[in-house]
Image (cartoon, rainbow, N blue to C red; front, side, top):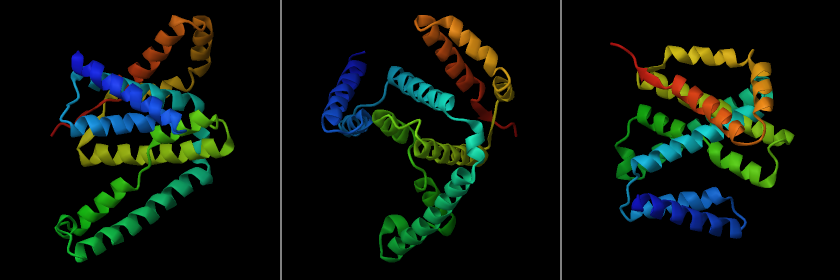
Length: 222
């Protein structure tokens, strides 16, 4: 418990400092993580649960603001695909040149690993972008929605790649999430009836965490 208190306190102080400098508090949180890890502190089960819950709720809030149809816009899927393709090619070439320059960490990598590393580096941080847009009140702007759509397409590509490369598949319950689309009017009515107090919070937690549990991946039976 003492470790949890120290970690949260350091994150709060550095987050407050980042905001004072005109930066998103998330920058301070990231710096706090680097500093605490450098001092030898390890994440406790409590901090791990908090971090997973925070990311889940943040992605859930993104889903509330994002229209699925926007992902089909050429400005979204085409730009995301073009961006990732160009970045992968450029970074692969750059990493290859670093290997030729004599850097041992890169010279020992073969071509597939170079492409894999470049593919990983081609992704942007959805969480960071969302927090920046929220801080500036630009989530509803056209360019804000396009940016989030492009980042979501990157996340989808990353999830698909990780699922297949690790030999994992979503649980059968994940299919039920598609039922939330026709149930949207019903869910909106329930949200209205819940009001703006603790019931609304519990309702959001139920949807977000319930959806997260249903799409947890399991190892494919061999």
